[in-house]
Length: 118
Image 1 (cartoon, one colour):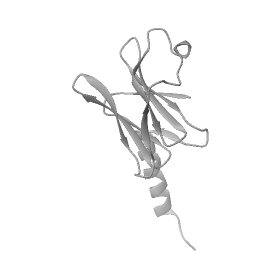
Image 2: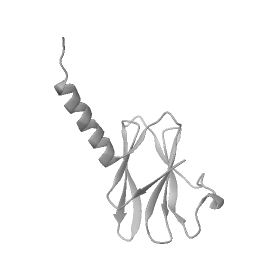
Image 3: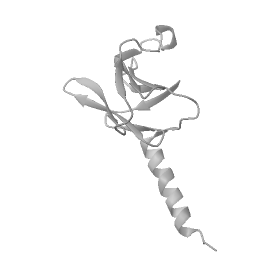
């Protein structure tokens, strides 16, 4: 399980096709998920995160969202009010904070443009 700190409006990229963002809808926090149509997205009532795995004062916000067959995302709020994504995914699936993902793509693009083709 990976725990990633996020603020309202910030995203994580899961794999290369799924973007998960925390948004505020009225007084509630929600997940906005941008994924290809062939990837099923469902709400799971019981979270895979047990109370014994959470730090003292942290609480789960809403239900767990399952993306495809192997990825689960839960939003956690710490005692101090910070937001965290708890992401359960197979080890071979890359997970990036969006700003790092975009930075990596930019570097790869710059490298590709500067490379000589012989």
